[in-house]
Image 1 (tube, rainbow, N blue to C red):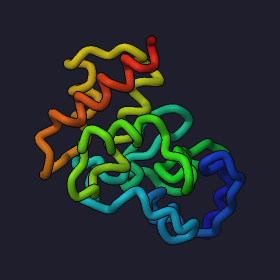
Image 2: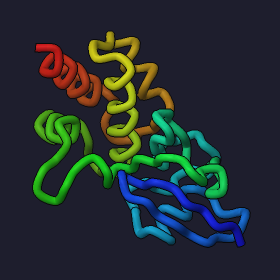
Image 3: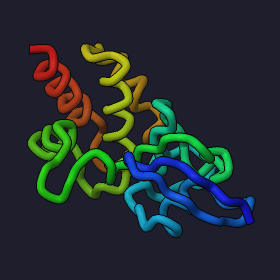
Length: 155
């Protein structure tokens, strides 16, 4: 077993997991944080996207032991039950998601992008979302939502 101590969504957490445990599995099973989804399990779909120390990662490809001492942000860390994050609000207003399976990864990718570049171009947005596969929307409304939040933040 491997002992992992990390900060998840601003809270210090500890887990003891087998060495082959992925970050995704630890988040879902040890911490009951089920926003990140198991999609392809090979890093192609982005359903498991989280932010580790300010960088986007596919949590299905990262071992839990690799996050020892690090800071992890999941979709659950963006909002409270009563108050959505501004990105989540705009995605809801624009109808940017349909089934929602890809939503947590897409929203975290949007947050990461806007943290790096508060006024992204459409190509910048497309590039940031390129690691997130969505079979429902066609991405147009996602791009519109990200453009909207960027405009609102720069005003």
